[in-house]
Amino acid sequence: MTSQTVIIETKILWRCEYSKKYACHGGLHTKLNYEFIKTVGEHENHTGNPRCEATRKYYEQLRQESEQNQTNPHNILIQINIGVPDEVRIQLSSNHHLKRNIRRWRQENTTEPTPTNINFPVIP
Image (cartoon, rainbow, N blue to C red; front, side):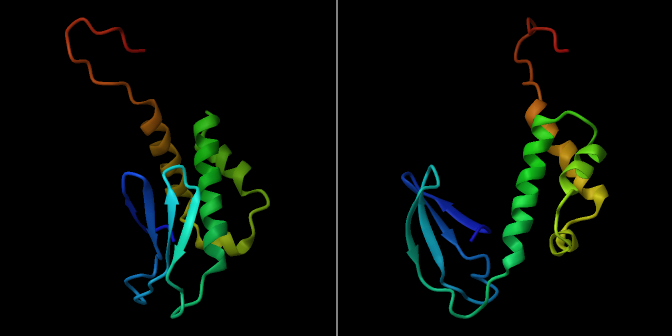
């Protein structure tokens, strides 16, 4: 349900990630704070992938750890990979790409605003 979303003023409309591949009509509606409202349609023409949720949780944990922990990306990967099932590791990108994601996420959170006048404060 995560691949395609539409945000309206009061709610978010979610479509099945297989809506185009299998013409699936499954979806759901949530409030803007992700509180569940209702389910729409059925997933009648495909089976779910139970490994998707575990992989998604891995990436969420990796992103959260990279934002909180300022050690080098290699150490973060070692720490996060402890106890990860082999089924999830198979679906992950290479360590090089995971480290690049960590650096990119950190850069998104630490970018200083562009100065708009000549009297801007000193940037560390």
